[in-house]
Length: 209
Image (cartoon, rainbow, N blue to C red; front, side):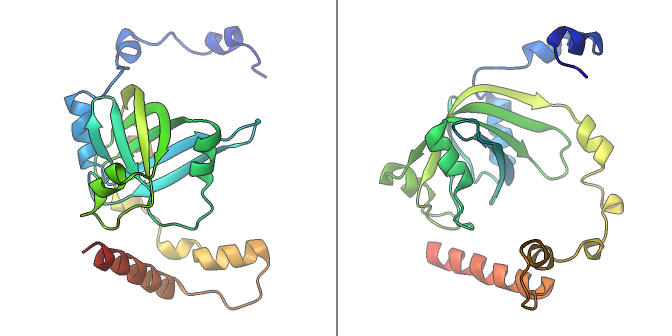
C-alpha cells in the first residue's frame, strides 16, 4: 500500500515542464472561448466537518456559464431536485472545481477557485434571456485554470457513437431508484420520464420568453 509521497513518486516520473507551466491564474482568450462553447460542466465541492465530497453535473446552451472577466465566472443555478448538495457545501466551504466539456472535443478545461452565492438582481438579471432566470448565481473567483489532454476521452471513445451501449443495457432511472429505495409502485417508463422532462424544459423556456 502506498502511504507516503516518496513511495508514490517512485512509481511515476516527474511531470514535464509543459505540464507544470500550463496552469495559469486566470482565464486567457483560449479558456474564455472554451467556456463560451461549453454546454456542460461538472462542479466539485466539499462540505464541512470532514463530510464527503460532491460532484454535480450542470448544463445549458453553449456559454450558459458566463465569463464576467478573466478572474470571474458566473454559473446560474437551474432547477433540479432541491437537494442543494453543491450550494449547501459552498456555504460551508467556498472552494470548488469545474471541468468544462465541449461535444466532440477530447480536451477539457479545469477551473479551480472559490465561490459566493449571489441572489442580487445584478447577477440574476444577467440571465433574463436564458432558459430561465435563476434563483441565484454562483460567482466563481478563478484561482487556477488549465487544459486537460485528450487521452482520457480517446481511451473511453466517449464521443464515438460506435462505442456507445444501447440505452436498454441499463434499466430506466426510475426502475433503479425504485429498487434502491424499495418502492412497490410501478416505475415510470423511460419514454414517460423523457416526455415529462421535455414538458418541464418547455415550461422553463416559456417562462423565460
